Length: 221
Image: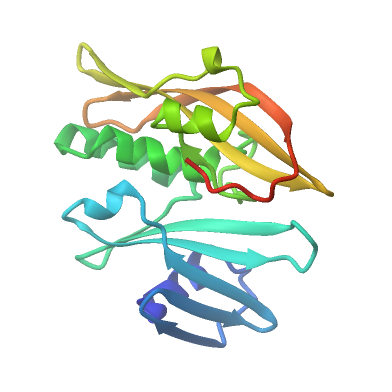
């Protein structure tokens, strides 16, 4: 992975002004960035947006706060022309919505929101997600993995046009541990994107902190 570019982005967007990256090195599927005693591990995000011609790398960055279940994740898009997008910045992600008018896959955009904002409380300009979420794009697979959830609450993503505006309606989900219990959240989204303009979105809980049987952290759908 592009350890130097990732390290520069972490320095610019994540670290406090007085903190400094001290070391960075990468292998094909990982990059490790050190800032004093704090380690940031970067790996390919494998989001749909990686298939866009202008995207060089889609990267998820993870760091542990040194406390059980206390983790932070950050999303980066690195463009082929040298540009970059720090996706935890709400204004940056909203601005990417304008690319829907020039061919960005709506589900690729929805996937970014699902990944980094499923646990968002809407109070900060930059959101530090505690554990990534996932776009619920296959209701049958989701229902088989989470039979605890009422299937009547689950639906596939919908993309529609309303005049000169694209509207996305979809669900996202995330698992997160609290002490010894694994909890499931499902969130419903409505995203509105006028052609060439930033996106706006609203979200509401569908399932909130549903305890899951102790079968380990299940692979997300």
